[in-house]
Image 1 (cartoon, rainbow, N blue to C red):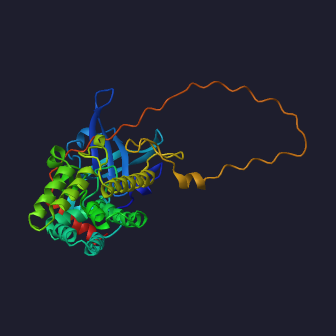
Image 2 (tube, helix red, strand yellow):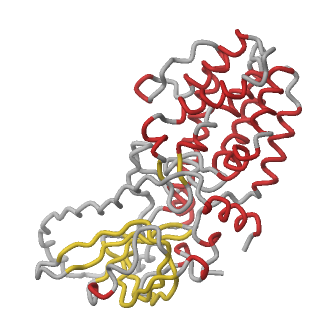
Length: 379
């Protein structure tokens, strides 16, 4: 097993370990010589890295999404950990355990899939149950459904994130159905299970997460509708009006036109699906933001564009107690007044550079099968 992981790194630590390259940028010093600005990571997070010397010897030996072994010194720069690399070399795929480098659900994918099949088996409406079973009986699609992330980076951005997100929504849907008695739970669960099914083809997850060409051009909503129509061809007795309701739930689950939803939710199950989807994604986004925040000091995370805010690190805020005041002496003392404070110039920290956007990759390569096999095998 790889050691140390990003989550284990401490300031002023000499680090020798292997990372996956999430971002690579060759830049120039003032002298004109090149230096490397990298984003390195493993399953626990990312770390910024710089290589200042001997760059010409290594900069053409690896690319983004390659594995590299590095030795360097970890320091704090602008309240973030930054690794200064002294030595670096590429590592072959066969020399690493993929499960050390790709974030994945803590739950076993087969266990989650079995739970989902159990939920589907409990759906009373025979047409909706048959539709969902047709999806899950398609083994190539089901395999991707088990390992796909739910998003590139916003929420549940890890292997198995899609099915974990769906199972969370199933639990929320059943709880909400006890409150709103008029909700058709079978229809709601069908919308939950199928609303993001198009993401198995929209996203790539062989190495870093990105978008396939189809995902860039069409998007998961349209892909999901295509999957739905393909499966319905095998179910000629499926009621046409029920088909329209399922189509609408896929089309409207983003909830607002400005969020990419072709239609606004127009019946209760569709509206509830949107709000549950939004709730679960935002809660996971908050959890992951606190867990992976790279700011060293302070109670707050960095700004998150998706949430449009920074988030309080609640546990750290509650754990750290203010220093106890020094007890005052019982006898009066005469002391000279303190010197006047020297005015300080206000400084403003420059924003940390953002990592380059991932390059879209083709979906469905042999890496996906290798990932699932390594993940199910465990460390």
